[in-house]
Length: 152
Image (cartoon, rainbow, N blue to C red; front, side):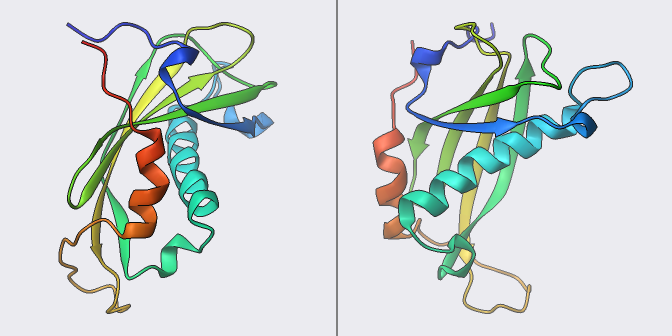
């Protein structure tokens, strides 16, 4: 059975994005690809701000191993999207995030994404094979405050 529809209280950190005319599809609601852009942006903006560094230049970088989205209600242009962020798990070499997407005054998420980063060696710089490596300490420090035990 799927988890209940998330509410604002389920998230720890927040970001806001502005929708654009081009975000909507021919049916007048936000295109599915845009949801994934927002999910990716919420995680990486948090990491960049919380670490105070260009996360692309760290000795280990997070590659997306899994991303998904559950849709509950339509979103679209015009209107800001509030993105709530919480961490479900910090492993040795991975971090599991949930991102709630809200539009308007309602307390319930209009969508929720799941996003998994697996950290790999970034020292080669040639785009070749990269070995899985521990989450960098600076990233671990940035995500631990977002950690919340999942609801039963």
